[in-house]
Image (cartoon, rainbow, N blue to C red; front, side, top):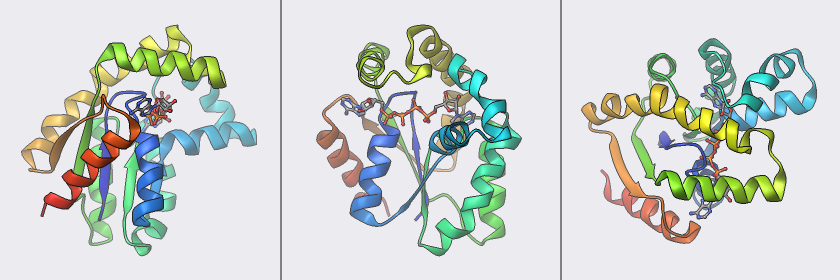
Length: 189
Ligand code: B4P
């Protein structure tokens, strides 16, 4: 199964993807994690992306598409992927469909985590206080939210028209959201 976890920054995509990996043995492909690893390693790619990410902007499509492409076959051979934070633009969505088609695969489900802006801000403020992730500061977070509304939210009709989209209430506890995702996955044929 290939699943896209969709939602605004701090909606809980990474949190729920990690749980699905543990419980369903799926492979998580998180472009955010891959980019943070590149930054931590000090690679040329990491140096290129650091300032953009800290400011809350989106990384160029060709970079994130290449990161996914490098890991896709391994994930498909293992039984399918959870795409976490990818795609974030129409160009990325179309590239993903094309890459999967080459492997004889497709997206099976898109689960959208619905969380209101007030709750997103609360979660991000908590993580900023706990972990100090640079792009969780209030100014960068505003840019991330704007990027989501401008570039990523318009993808919802793309998946809805294909009949792939399920909306899940992401406002509850981590366990409550997990239960709602499980119901969505298990009831969709
Ligand atoms: P990501 O790493 O994808 O970050 P995110 O959208 O903020 O995180 P997520 O929704 O996974 O939230 P999480 O579970 O962590 O992207 C970071 C940056 O990388 C982007 O801004 C961009 O610059 C770049 N990037 C990544 N992918 C890209 C792409 N495809 N194209 C271009 N640029 C790209 O949860 C957040 C917090 O809330 C956590 O502290 C968690 O503990 C808490 N939480 C989660 N669920 C909760 C719940 N139900 N209740 C209470 N708290 C909860």
